[in-house]
Amino acid sequence: MSETSLPPLLLVGCGKMGGAMLAGWLERGLTEAVVVEPQAAAVAGFAGRVTRVPEPAAIPPGFRPGAVVLAIKPQEAAAVLPAFARLAGPGTVFLSIMAGRAIAGMRAALGGEAAVIRAMPNTPAAVRQGFTVACPGPGVTATQRALADRLLGAIGEVAWVEEEGLIDPVTAVSGGGPAYVFLLAELLEKAAVEQGLPADLARRMARATVAGSGALLAASPESSAQLRINVTSPKGTTERALAVLMAAEAWPAALSRAIAAATERSRELAG
Image (tube, rainbow, N blue to C red):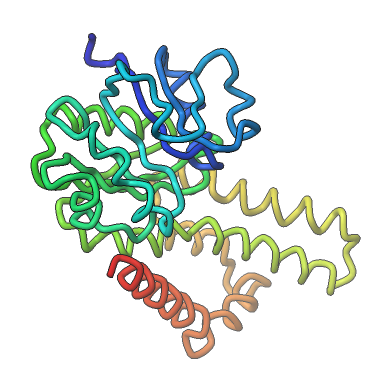
């Protein structure tokens, strides 16, 4: 197998994120995959390209995946993971995208020697514009880490941390970040309607403004602060609006509190 090809994969759960990842892997040339998913409709779009089984017991006996990707709901982990312990071994890495599930707990459920990588992607993965931060657990080899990097790279940009505790603020910032951006678009649309703009125009304008600003941010070498300054003419309309948002640091303080609250919740979920 070449360094860029993908080995056989086992995907556990094919919801929105699992499905987005599977689509990315197939685009990268994945040729053999088994998906454990009780809902046939969730895998219908991949018919003929993957093998779906409704439960772990139905996995073909001879199937030996190079990676098992855990894309189930975090609250299902305790009941589901032990069924995959038989796959733990030197030839398989477990890649988890479950929010709040700590590596130690997953290893305990899978068997103490399981190689586990914990990762936090975000929903722009659906359009291959995701951002994922990953952390390797004990015993993960360089080869396994490289494989996980290729798998996560199929849905966007990847970064690595060595300290698992950093995954909690990552969850708060990039994991939940799309929701904050979508809230901004939602509030811009609402405010535009309140100022008399037609609803359809308000919606188009808000969405295009947020999407276009994100594209500019991604393409520009300038800092986000400088890009903000570039839009803010002295004594102009944007300066007036920012004065309201920044009054007594209302917006910055609220966002900092929001990120702190989400980080703490991630720690609570991890136990």
